[in-house]
Figure 1 (cartoon, rainbow, N blue to C red):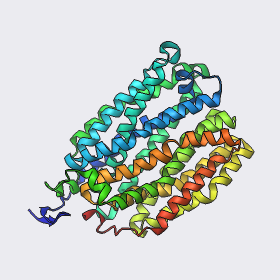
Figure 2: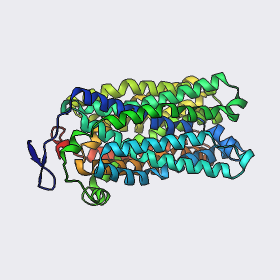
Figure 3: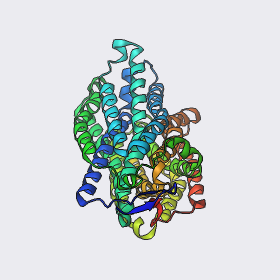
Figure 4: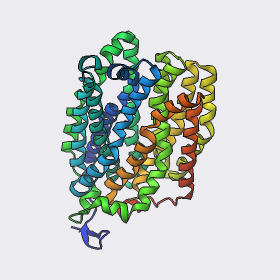
Length: 440
């Protein structure tokens, strides 16, 4: 068997070349699994108002939304912890084992969320159980994105690495489309009273039906070629190694992800409730706007990933961050002035283009910053720390800014500031060589 010299200077098996069947199975398992977990995690945001009324006693609608979004954000607190535990598991024992475990945790916690009795039935136990479910969801999500990204990129042929990474993020956008479509369908089919009483529970319970397929696919696919090529030379303390030897790469990932996560959760989860509760836009229009943004995302992401394999990845990151820096305030001003469904659709469509430029290249670009031996851990920690601190609480921060300042465009100030930070990181970063990046 041919050998190569690994990072520790010892010989290990050469990187295996996967068959077409293995690549197809890897694509299916990563994308379906990632879709399932992100759908379960995201769906909460589209029913925040209904969940808030069911689980939190309050008369002020804004206070109810704040309480619900605070619980939404609590799930993100556990994401860094999940990234450390599950990322270390993935780097020590294999990506597949960690990904199967994350799916099981997400399926259990999501179904439990849909079965929680309301506050009127069990009192304070209702929000307590809801918080526990969100914590468990957050723990699972902390290991999902980094694991699925690592899995796909490590399986990708070198000349299609950008496209494969984009397909991983494409599954995330498909999860958003699925969540929004179901939310829109339920808003159309059910009365507001029925939606608040039991309708919001349907997607949480129904999402469980996809879990067996995802678990089956992930259990059957072989480990990634890059992980197998490491042989027995695996880190005993991947978290320590990631935060010491590779801390600069982790910090770079953290800085890059800030605008990506803030824009995603503000233009996504926050905007639906902002448009309906504050701007008084019809809920169907608000959800349609989010759906349009996600569909635009789906079109842009694979095209950007494919193009990045030919012209490089950094130009797309610059264009995205700069775009959010320049257009966020005008877009929120448009919505605040017009207060129409069309203004919401225009806003989400523009955000979908800019987000798609970032999403199409970021998964692969971030993986290329890291060596195989700690890629799962370092990627997950850097990404999820940014998601927790900036993205997870973005809906809460945006709602609070509107309440405290009285300015309907104030959420755009937060997006603009975050865009400036990420753009600075991107401009000062030397892009890795795609030809050799994943061979480390």
